[in-house]
Image (cartoon, rainbow, N blue to C red; front, side, top):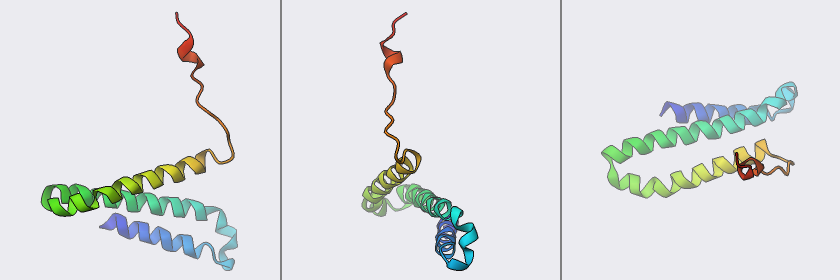
Length: 98
């Protein structure tokens, strides 16, 4: 519950940092947006654990949304980390035998 509230607070900070009066702090806007998303996903995961043990029907209904939210989070983090870089993992070390 508190993770949702913290995530909502970070979302509000994301909106506020877009205001022209706070142009000096605009570099933190993306961080607030990503942190908001992460906190809400963690809060959703914690509520899913609770539902698994106490409300089995609600868990089964929300299970697909948890998977979708993890995929979206992974995609966002991937594009933030590798934006504009065409780098692929180097597997040449696997081809060398002792």
